[in-house]
Length: 134
Image: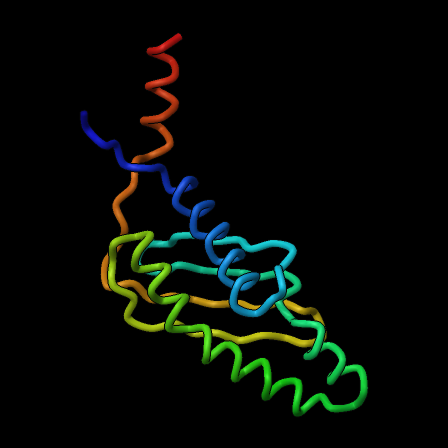
């Protein structure tokens, strides 16, 4: 039995689900939405509602600087696990992860720089296979 390559969309969904689970398990906070997009050797990640309740409380009570420090430290602490998750899912080394969060909007954006472009099946091949099957 041969294993066919997943589509780009399937890979992006798998990564998004696994990243959301990682945040839930490690930070005790589940983001409302995680979006991933592969673009050549880059993986772009957008995390909605990524700010934890303690960070929100700090920001709301005038401790903005401390909230930003906590967010930065959490991003740094979770990056090795995030890197491992991406490498395991794509079977490609991650060269670097660039990250930033905005407390006001609750969004975190990341770009994972990959060592090479991931292999995936094109959506056109999926459409063609579906047509043949019908």
